[in-house]
Amino acid sequence: MRALTYSRYGGPDVLELTDLPQPKVPPGWVLVDVRAAAVNPVDWKIMSGGLDALMDVQFPVVPGWDVSGVVAATGIDVPEWSPGDEVVAYARTDWVHGGTMAQQVALPARLLAPKPATATWEEAAALPLAGLSALQVVDRLGVAAGETVLVHNASGGVGGFAVQLAAARGARVIGTASPANHERVRALGAEPVAHGDGLPARVRELAPGGADVVVDLVGGVVEQTLAVLAEGGRHASIADDAVEAHGGTWMWVRPSAEDLAELVRTVDRGGLRIELDRTVELADAVAAYRLSAEGHARGKIVVRMP
Image (cartoon, rainbow, N blue to C red; front, top):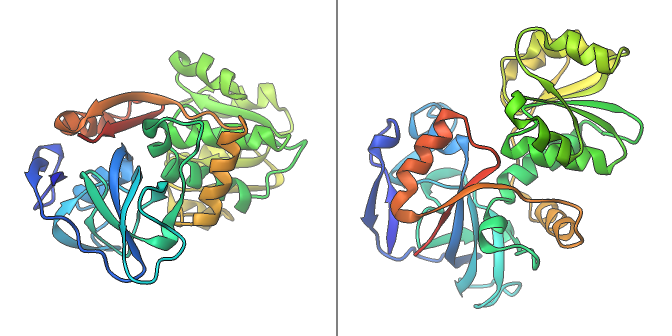
């Protein structure tokens, strides 16, 4: 099978297209024919060696933790899935090796959820990691109707989902973004404000009492968060452990088929939009990783499998 791989730590230049054997399918696992896989910032952070202290890596690595596809085969004792089932998954396992940027991927059956019926393969692949990150942080912070929520980096892949999920719960959402992305943030259900110097004053103009909840999806904004947080407010970050020293919660998205199935149902009833920046072919995946590393994507970048 064709796959994108790297055999040493580095930047996008270490990536190459290679041929690999079909993955083995252990008991309790399934083999998925990949239709599409999404690029996430964590992919190139791992590739750079930035998470070496946290996760074991077995080279060569196939990057990618987001996938949509069709079950090709099941291992022993997998009654819940059958060949031909259309599925999505946040495909993180306990070590880094066989990712989703390949024509096939083997995954634990417990990670899979049905593909959204109303979504394309490319849209479905963009949902798992970013959608779960947004859902789990909104749940952990207990976002409720009538509250004011500030989302740092509201125009990013996770931010777009977080805005929609918080707004759907009846919260007033303020989202930081560059001015070029303000219309997109507004369309998702948030009041946009420019990020950077002077942010606390701009947020206080919109919400003099401050924000009941602050969601940090970018990192490096602890001082800004504390400057706008209302008394007794809650805050969490998926990007900066420094929040723990200031009463916040540092989170890392967890694989959860139940949470993913909830997101799928929300998509299918029209309650969650999936926005793509662009879709590229596997042959152009290296360029997609360069674009992601530059931090200028609006929505998700998805790779279509041949």
